[in-house]
Structure formats: structure tokens, C-alpha cells
Image (spheres, helix red, strand yellow):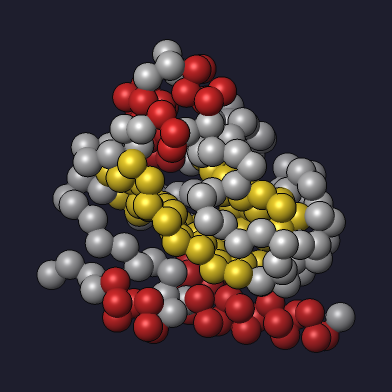
Length: 200
């Protein structure tokens, strides 16, 4: 039985995506400590990215809270030379996902892209993989499966990125803290960030 997006959204869970049998959902917890240059921001976020190269659907869902600056950009980056570390250029459109909440410190976002369209990609990433959407799809899929793709949220306080997290597939073994936080869902992520802000 496929998961019901409406029920999950009502429950506030971030892992809310229906998909075909060939789709895979990759998840992460975003923190300042996971930035390429780690920072001390108390902000926190969670993300679920579902990609089905067969149907050309990339679904991005994320929530964040407690940014020290206002959000200025957000995108997926790929592919780093080593899993879980380093930096790479943006995969998705820049400066931000279509309709991403900018100018805020707390927000939630969900959007589906048609990856067969060149407009769904950052032009530099598309060009680096032969200028074709199929080349870009193959590269992103390989990066996601290798753990070398990450989601980054930039802010006015941290222009190069305030919080980020490397996306991992269900077959990867997440760190226990990340697994627990994803299981708690969106309300808990937002509540934790609010409590952190009040205690500082």
C-alpha cells in the first residue's frame, strides 16, 4: 500500500512522498555543523528528496527553523569527490528552488520538478554532463546513491550556507541522531529549533 501524502502532511512528517517502484527517497538533517566550513548556528532543518529518473520526477520537501539570518538561497549540490564531505556546484536552478521561501528564518517547502526539462537544472551542471538532461539525471542519480549530493540553505548571516546535509538513501545506515530526528517529523524539528533559540 502506497503512503498517503495527505495523511503524512497532516501529521507533519517530512517523508511524505508517493512514488513509482523505481523512485528512491533520500533524506537528511541540515545543521550548521555539517557545512563545509562548520558554523555555530542553532538552526535546524530536515529534507526528503525523491528522484525517479524513469518518469523524470524530482520531488523536494524541506523544512527549516531558527536561521540566524534570512534565507537567501537553497539548492541541491552534486557531486563531491568523497561521500559526506567537500563541496560541489549547484544541480538545481539558482539562486533558489522555484517558490522557496526567501527572506525568512523558518519555513517549509515542497515542489516537484520535471527533470526532462533543461529549465529544471542549473545551466553549469547541465553543461558539465554533456548538455543533456539525461546526462544530468544520470549524474545526479549516481551522486545521490554515492552520498555525494547535499541540500544547502543559505542565509544573510551565512551567504555560503547556514545549514546543509548530505542526502542518503534508505539502504544507507544513518547516524542514530539523524534517524531519530527524521522519525519525529516536521513539528518536532520546528519545536526543537524554537526551544534552542529561546534558550540562547
